[in-house]
Length: 154
Image (cartoon, rainbow, N blue to C red; front, side, top):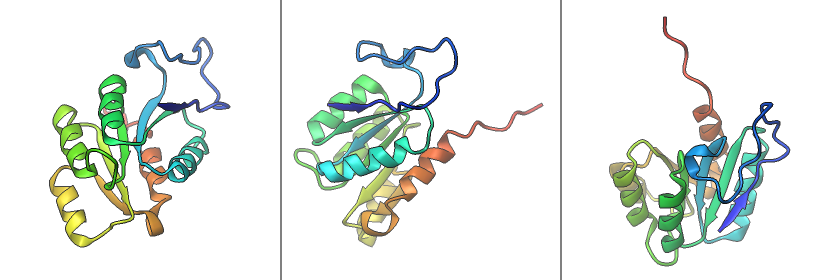
């Protein structure tokens, strides 16, 4: 498991950086699980997410089994998921993630952006479906929008 710390993100006073031993519920910030077997994709996405200058913690899984274990451990608010992975397919993972935590936002980011794959992913509960070649940076737009607090109601 690779965990990228979002430093140098400013932290509110009195908040200490999380450690690997902290339970997920006590870690400050927004947790994202990246699931892709390409180190280049994971590094690029992590860098883009860190450029948001928000308290986002990024964990990386490079295969299906690792993704399931990290999902259970971290309970992320969002998952960025490739469809082609060693072990379980992205479709299998999507189905498991949505069954375990329906409120988790799942963003499919794939090289295989075929219409039938898009339809299947959306039917299984994907919240977004992006083609790596053309929509890579839309992932950060979605994550940034998730961090905007809802308007206050009177």
